Length: 266
Length: 303
Image (cartoon, rainbow over all chains, first blue to last red; front, side, top):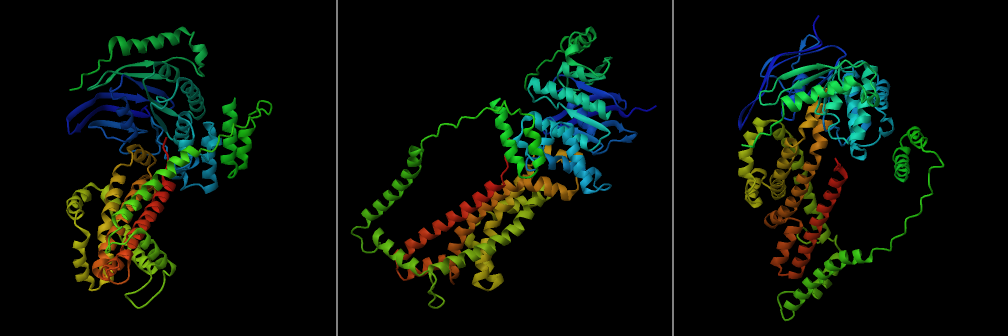
């Protein structure tokens, strides 16, 4: 049985004017259908690079990435990305932003009323139906991120790729959106790969946590399976000894064994 | 609570026109009781001080200029005084559209002919320059191909192009238009190209993830993102075009504000020259203002 996403022996070397930078080495990762996987590590460890590779936005220096038995050669709507800074187009309304994605994926097979219906449904799913006519600068950061998620979900992707989607939000909004994401994923049964640097977020959301070592030439240090039944409740989990255990395991990896040493700028 | 009510009322106002259903939905969750009667904010007195600060200094500036002008020309016979110039201006503007043969027409005709040449030359420059800017910005190879040419040709004085125009078109009017074209094209090419190069990578990544067609990328992402840059280019170009036309018309003749200046110089009618200078300034200002207001209309706020 093959896995849904397979990353096989991937190396990533960036060549810039300053020279070569070995970002990732010997990355092997398998993600099953319907699984929620988070990538965690200190900043600069290449977790976003790995996500971009899965998205197809960058190509690996060597190695192979497969999604549903097909090589990932370019980005595509079946692997929807939610970007860290929402990346909504400021000249389009929320509705138009989502519609742009819907149109691309479904226009060939569906009529325009159906496309509009889908767009509205996606906005309703993230509780942003009321702001359809607004432009991104008229709504808050959390709302923008929700619209970004709606845009990704509206494409009915096989994989949802989230690049620190809640990183720029305040703690309360973040918690709220995490809960909503959990509900949405439970409903849509999406396969999710998410980059984060927040330990609680990783434990709360994931089936497996992929912990990465520090760069340069970062690789996967350890993979932690989070055996907590769903639906998960953040308030109850706080007192759950297993939750504390998983949390400690991640913290231990990140701070005790792979403490981040800021490299002195050359 | 106050802020919630505040938002709701805004929502209603914003969305109400387009979709009443949405408006109802936003009002519903706010219980009627919870809505306090908002006290009318105290009406601030009219900001006379602010107005005075805005209006008085420019008036003082202009008054000062006229005063110096008056003082310097008090005993002069060749240079007209402000009073005499003003009296002449009243006469000139009282009949702006007369026609006494090809070389003696009202100031209105002169301005219109100049604007007409600017419109054609500038319009052609926009039609060529903006698409060219897009291509240069989008394709690195073409950028490297054209950038030395642009760097070389851009600083050339407008009037150096005039003989080429005269040679090719064998007539004064197209030569003047050609000069405007070639001088006002550079800011539009350069700004459009820079705008295309500065489209945020995130937006292009969105386009790649959505796998948008090249047409959609251009209409939905590139064009709106580049528009502010493009309009800056257009504004600079119009300014240049208006500078160039006066010079070009002095050499080519015909009807036009530049030719008028030169003609009045030959008649030694300095008052008319001063009036023309003022008129050129005002028209340039109006062109600039118009384009700034268009640009503001199209600028988006990504806060």
